[in-house]
Length: 318
Ligand SMILES: [Ca+2]
Ligand SMILES: [Ca+2]
Image 1: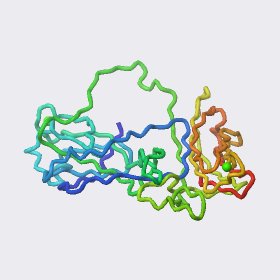
Image 2: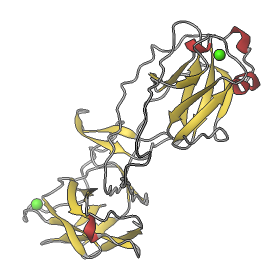
Image 3: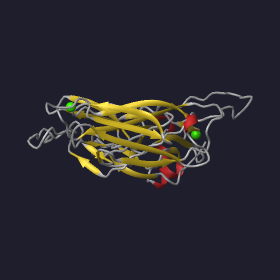
């Protein structure tokens, strides 16, 4: 268990403000080997007890965090009045189960501590709306538009808190797994688009919500343009495994005289892994699978995105 206390900060804070809805934008994401589903929690403010003190834990990195009794004391909490079994951790309105060493005797002893897994603030499930404010599509965003810093609220008293279960388990081979999955995220936020626009008189994007196509992109691609990035995979499995790649792009103009005028081709080490056509302002959001045998463990892998417009001077935000 990787225990990191140094990255955590505890402040004694009276909770006075609600968490804001989080929106964020991704421009270009290639996810290789595995896609983790972000869990979308509905906003829930019922966990708050007004005028009660909580510890506020700011989290910048995905890690295990250990909170000791000394952390509570240093934050100004008199732990003599705290039944550790009632300590609860909340994130975005949802209680998070924690491992608590020494809470069963209901006495917060000097060596008692709490371990919890906490993450930075991801964008998570983000809705994009039409001009009529109906949801047009939803994306799992990597970055939050406002902050990477996540906040975990630690409260106590009342009923018992959620706890991780303890199990006795013995493994013949303690390190049985020979493979693991890794996710690469390529996102370059260089161009901001207010969203889909069919022409110079189209002002549908004057919308308070995230309008369809709105967000940060790497480039407003023109025909013949290739965008390139690299990544390293030094621990490839001996037996080839499936890799998953996802990309998102949004045409920024169109022609009605050509069907499927937008084409994007994705190459991994000069092998075509995706070749997708879209018509008019239809967005690209494709997930394709390819073999890890296309990847290299002795040199950098090269991933390229190529754009082609047919029949006119077309562009697509990528
Ligand atoms: Ca104890
Ligand atoms: Ca067309």
